[in-house]
Length: 138
Image 1 (cartoon, rainbow, N blue to C red):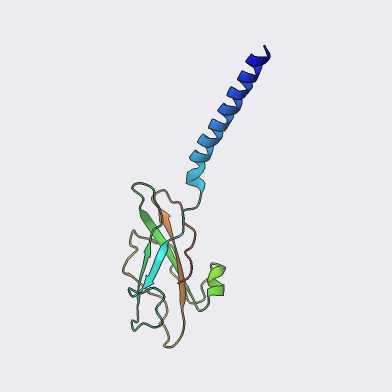
Image 2: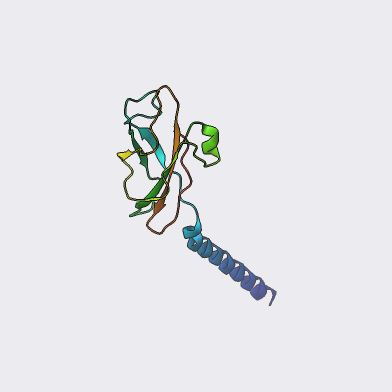
């Protein structure tokens, strides 16, 4: 009898663990996506200077799921990394843009000033409407 009871307990615990794995796997959709990677401005990583009035921005969607696609993005541009660390922009906030484009995205904020540093971050949305974390500043 004791052996049957311990066997039943082991099976019950195993079942609970399996349910926990299934539940955590199902809640994957409620999690945040990984932040975009490899940010570039005018085909360069962290350029010291550019000569474009509306520089082209690039990033790599960081979603390894099969068939993953970007459906929207948001770009924040700031004069300091500190502002961006609070996910705030003192220069430009693109707002959520419905687009699968992650290359050749033109900056359309206020005119950029010569000899001034600018920093930017981006986040993306997938086809299920799940938003990523913001990227590291570039």
